Length: 130
Image (cartoon, rainbow, N blue to C red; front, side, top):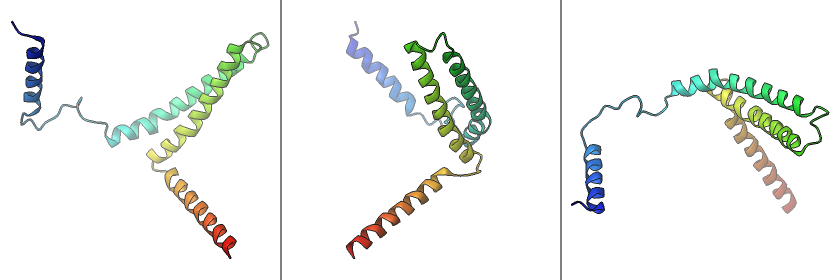
């Protein structure tokens, strides 16, 4: 009769045998996302997500700000959530879209702004020391 430890040992032995095989091909399900997948999602899918998301949030705000529903705490919460969701969509999707479409890179802009701020603070420190 096999004990639980023997069963665990046998299954780990089988797992280690299967990973040490000399198989060099991988199935499509095992490969990671490629650049083409990234490009397709951010260039073709993300604008639709942005449009549908913002339109849905506008409709939510229109419904939640009606006179009959305006006083309820649930409506206030859902309205605030719709605004926050719209802001998240508007500030997250366009930078990724522009970078994926190779139109504009916000990361370079961020680095130049940081560099300018650092230079200004260094100049301010130097001028205070004089």
